[in-house]
Every structure is written in C-alpha cells, then in structure tokens.
Amino acid sequence: MPATTPPHDRRRRRTTRLLAAAAALATAGALAAALPSTASADEKTGKHWPGRYQDVQLLSFNDLHGNLEPPAGSSGRVTELQPDGTTKTVDAGGVEYLATHLRQARAGNAYSITAAGGDMVGASPLLSGLFHDEPTIEALNGLELDVTSVGNHEFDEGARELARLQRGGCHPTAGCYGGQEFEGADFPYLAANVLDEKTGKPILKPYWVWKKKDVKVGFIGVTLEGTPDIVSAEGVKGLSFKDEVETINKYAKVLQRQGVKSIVALIHEGGFPSGTAYNYDCDAPGAGDGISGPIVDIAKNITPQVDALVTGHTHAPYVCTIDDPAGKPRMVTSAASFGRLYTDTTLTYDRWTGDIVRTAVGSANHVVTRDVPKAPDMTELIGKWNTLAAPIGNRPIGWISGDIGNTGTESPLGDLVADAQLAYGKELDPETDLALMNPGGIRAPLTYAAKGAEGDGVVTYAEGFTVQPFANTVNLQDITGAQLIQVLKEQVSGANTAAPKILQVSSGLTYTLDLTKTGADRVVTGSIRLNGAPVDPSAVYRVASNSFLAGGGDGFPTLGQGTNDLVGADDLTALEKYLTANSSAGSPLAPPKADRITIVK
Figure 1: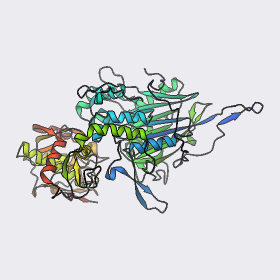
Figure 2: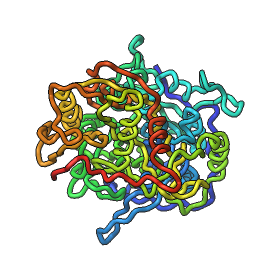
Figure 3: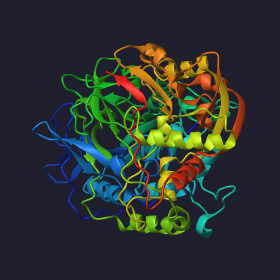
Figure 4: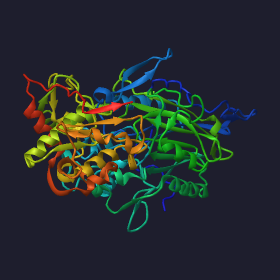
C-alpha cells in the first residue's frame, strides 16, 4: 500500500522563481474570512517561528489534452463576464503562457502545490499525439506539476501505455524519438478507483501526500466510474472502475489513519454551471445553486474529511461551493480545458489540528492570457517537437472558405465529418446508406486563418489530426430501421438522459428533435427520413460510423448490435480523402449549413 511519498528524485525543486510580483489572489467563491497572523515571535529574543495558520496555495487545471500550442478558434477562447452584465471573449491557452502564469502565481508563495484533474493527454493535437503524448509529459514536468488524477483519455492507448508515461521508457513500436529515451512523468498519476481485475489492486498509486516542514496535504485521485462507456474496449481491457464516492471515502480514512487530515480529491468528473463565463458566480443565489451534473451528487456524498474537490471532464469552468454530507459548504472547482484557465485556491492549514480551515478557503479561476512573456523553456520544447512533426503535419489536405465550427447541437464540422465517413463508406461498399458521428470525437474546429505558413483557408494534416486524433477505424454494419430509430432515441435516453449526446448525421438523414419533451420522446419518430423517405422499421440500412460508436460506445448499445461488419481505414484518412476530393485552392469547401436536425425549443 502506498505510503507518504516524497517527490520523484528527478524533480527539479523550486529553487528559483520568476522575479515578477505575484498578482493578488481573487477570492471569488471565498467561504469566509480573516484568521490570526500566520507567524509568531518571542518578545525577548525576536525569534520567529511558525504560527498556528499557514496558507497553502493550490494551483490546478484539468483536461489539457496535449494542447501545447495555443488552441485554434473557439477552443482557444474563454468567455468573460463584464461588470455591466455583458460578456466578451478572451484569447487563452498555450503552455508557453501557462508556464509564465503559473510561475508568476507561485512567486512569493513558499507553500505552493500544483495539481491536475485528469485528461492531461489523449485526444491531443498532432504535435503531441503523433509522439504518443511524450511532448505533453515533458511539458508538464517543466510546468512543475506535482500530482494529477487519471482521466478517461489516459486510457485511450491502454493501461500499459499509461504506465509507460508514468515510469518512462521508449514506445514499444515507435521506439525512441530523437534518439533519446523517454524519462516519464516527474509527478504521480493517481488512479484510486481503477483496479487490475486479476489482482484487485489500483494500477497506479491511489493517493499521494505533499509535505513541507510540518504541513501535510493528501491527494486522492479518481476518474469517472463510467470510463469504460466512453473509451474503446481495448483501452480498458482487464480493468475495473469503481464508484468515485466509495473510493474517495475509503482512502480518506487511510490518510486519516496516517495522520493526514488535510485532503483534496482530484476527480475526473464534473458539472455544468448555469453560466458559461469563467468568472460566473456559481454560488448565486445560493451555494451549489448554479451548477448541475454528476459532480453535484458526488460532492454531496464525499466524506467531510475531504476539504476541497478539483474536478474536470465536462470542460466547463466553475468555482462553486456544494454542501458536504454534514451540510457544510466545500469548494469544488474546474478550470475549463486545453490550458485556457488555471484555478488559484487558498487552503488555510491549521497546525494545531492538521486540518484545513474550511471557512477560510478562497478560490478563483484565472485566464491564461497571451499578453505575458512566453516561457523560453516551453518555446524550446515546442520547437524541438515541431521540427520532428513538420514533415508530416504541414502537408495540405484540403481548402475551406471559412471557419467550420464544432459547437452546437448540430455543428457544421459534425456534418462534414459524417459526410466524409459516408463517402468513404460508399468506397468500401456502394450500398452504404448513412453515417453517424459522435460529437465528442470531433475535438476542434477547422479555422480559415492560417496557423503557420500554409496560408489562409488551407487545411493541413496537423489540423485534421487535431479534429480527429483517436485513430478510430471507419466501420460499416447493417442495422434495421427499427434499430436506427432506437439509436437516435438513445441520444436523449438511457445513459444519455441527463447529458444528451446528439450524433452528427450525414447528408440525407433528417429528423426533428423536440426539446420541449423529455427522454426518448424528444426524438420525433415520424419525422425521421432518409433521402426524403420515412425510415422503414423493417428495412435493413448500411451504416458507417467509427469503431468506438460501432462497438456501442458513448451510450449507444444498439449500434453494438449491428451485423455484417466491415472494417476500413482510420477516420482521419476518410476526412483527408473527402477534403482532397471536394476542395481545391481555387474552389474551397464552404462550411455546411448544419440544417439536418430540426430543433424545437
């Protein structure tokens, strides 16, 4: 069983800091108030010693997904609420800037911890994904990350690959990039609720304890119990995922028995705030009133022994208080995604009790703006990996006449990807009728403005990779019309009742989504048509989808019942083929209208 552990031997301790003065911590979401001085002095000798209270700075972020360079389009912006009630968008993200912001925030804080809430890797842009996310681990080492929980995307390539990212060593098939052996993460990945089915033990450390002098803070890390539902079966083979609350409560007791009473849970599961701005007041009109989703029930049931929750997964920004089982408010935070925000939380440690003074906890999200100096070490790291990636990533694969976004119930890029898979499906089998694409598999927009030297409107292979980084294959299968209707209803029922997953559909498939209704009734059965004709429940349709969906992933078990399977190439190949065939420099592809699903509100 893991014991209290010091940082890894390789960790470069924080012996130097940027000389810039630290910005004053905003205390939005602060639970209360002033405490006595944190230090005392002997009146006769003048000698100082630590007082009863010690402020501990907790910097946190989540869902980086290997975004080392500033994310493009809407993925690289945050919404900011203005004093007059209006909103504006702010460009944000990029590890060159994140490093500077974190280093400036730490300056002057001797007791500072940096933690993360999972999905540091996986679904990454080509710069990291092409190299099995070794560049991101190197960047996180440089950011001096202390600890992170695993997320669902840490299992995209399976437990063995996750173990390699933790411990180091060259990739088993790709080998050593640049002729150097990969050293692995300087920080521990925590996976308290991810067990090896054979041994029944966590595959990685379940908890970790940060220590400085007489101050100790324990961290327990979990991912969402539903990880197997949103990761390929191969990625979670041989693993079991346990209940988040039961697991955290179990290890909170373990830490308490070791004398660690200050505890933070790192949970890769999240919520949905009522406001979209990063600085939205989540506690207005009352504690927990401004947030919904899975994290609310989790937070309400985690033992009061846990003092704060750092969360993720939903890519939403929030700083909320949610009452614990004893009815006392407890801080719950998330810093959106892609390195656009970081959270600065003050935990006031009581040396007499060894616990956090909950009424003094304050927290706020801060934008990773791009108006600060770039961190030279991150610039050097990005340059090194870009040199290796450039021959592959800079190759043009298509041309577009404007931004093609990936947001909304039906998105223009969702239509494009579905059309690409339908076209590729027809190459494999001319009898292919339609294509379905899960929205979570489309990771970024396509933007008209040039990212590098390729020119405006050019889509590079790297940009296509950022959109579809999972290397899922395009699969064909037969399903009946009745099953197709059921698949569409599964978007808003079953596992997807609370958080609907609206599939992106290929040209020719149309239907009405009535959001005034509830559950499966939101899909209007009589409106479902293919090429203008009603879907026949008894007919057989040939459907193209990615291998994840075809296996029943994302809460679509009916797709897992398809027959007569045919496996094609990866989905990025399908997108590349479509863009190359349907666009040119002189005739760029226009953004689809996103008018296949009629939405009633």
